[in-house]
Figure (cartoon, rainbow, N blue to C red):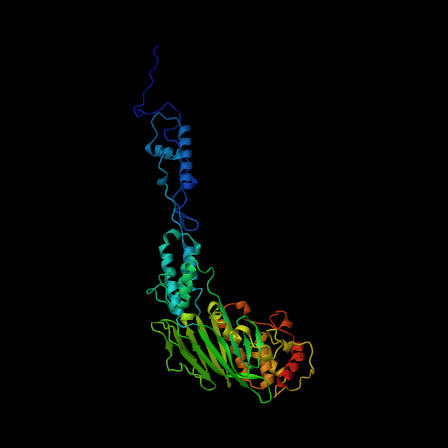
Length: 482
């Protein structure tokens, strides 16, 4: 009996094995690392890392070994196996590009931290910094495509440019202070010193103000009510001199107010020649004594006078010493506020130690108790507690109500307003106290110190109680008129 011959399948190729498995095996599931999108998390463009590639290669190799083969593996698989064994050059796995949005933001903060919106030229400098910020974000856009912080920064830049009317084209600020060093811009060379490691912190600023009867806020944030009749130096250092003249407000009273202010900006190398400004009651010029309105050459000027309200308010901006001065007339009297770098304000000789802004009023010239506040207003006792009209016509209740309308926070400025109304009867002192507080908010570098509270209030934002005011004010009034 002849055996039946088995047919040979002509369709079988020379590399077919004897396995009973189907001709096509299911492909292994793709590695999670290889199915990720081209960019993931924090804006880093993520080609698969070396470790991910090696793991994928090892998995593919293991799957291939589980399938019997008579033919050599394909070239692509060999390459993956070589990768898994570390036989390819390590440099072939490129590191992802880094998103540098944090550096862009840090540079922008550095360029704008010293700017003051009250100073002339603020918008120009702020727009330069914004354009630099926008340029930095564009340079890192490819690496930051998936970074939410980056996209928020781009939207924020667009909003700020619209708010400040900044054009997209124009000069930009440089993040290298030495490149943009301007000898007549205090902020510029102060930043350059910080960049070179000369300063660990940006320059600090001090505030001094004088208003009302008069009330003095020193560079140390001490608050005093003084007599200081006649001419007294507020500031006298190597860069600036400010002198005020005070006259009696009411006949028979020791209370005085300022009717003359003289300011001398001292000559400073190539930045400006000496400039003198003088204001007296009913003559608040918008020019220096020599008729000029600026000092120094170039644009912007190193020293500039800006008139905010004709005959009522002027500002002086001294870029070369980083100083701003506000002078106002309210009623018959003048007020002054100044912001100056601490390093310059404290630069003076021993013979210049009589400066009200630095050391306060002498003890013999103070109406308060010398503790830096109008603490007599909140004194624990008084010779009389009647709310009868004080000199020359305001009651304590009426004075408190009028001052509270302009100054809802019962801080030392509110108390000074009440004191001035009771001692002078001049309602213009209410506006003087209110504007003095506004000058603090515009010029004082530390927001948490804008308000000063009498010691009796223990720092409570709404100040002392009406009863404490009622007890202390008559006592202070008697002191003024003795």
